[in-house]
Image (cartoon, rainbow, N blue to C red; front, side, top):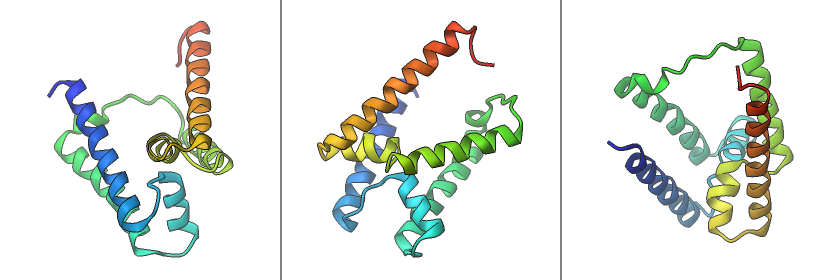
Length: 138
């Protein structure tokens, strides 16, 4: 399947799933908020099912397309864990992640989400440009 087609279908499925969650539960499909609540908040069944579905989806992809995970990583486990904690801290500080703000917030025409998504994108562009100027990412 052509990467454009696969990306388009993936985006449509994410949008449909987000809309279904909003319409059926009145909840926003922000991964960081759902994951944090499932881990540290009230154990609502839909949140646990949502997080479990992320893991099961990853395992299905690993079994069906193992090459999708064939990305060389030359970083230490400590550095990766630290980066993950910083991302988690940032999503809590920003009151949401790219999925919550970019997919769901923009779909609801939220001004706060538009600002947050703009900040995510500008930071990503600046970081990529800086890394490129420094000779590329290791």
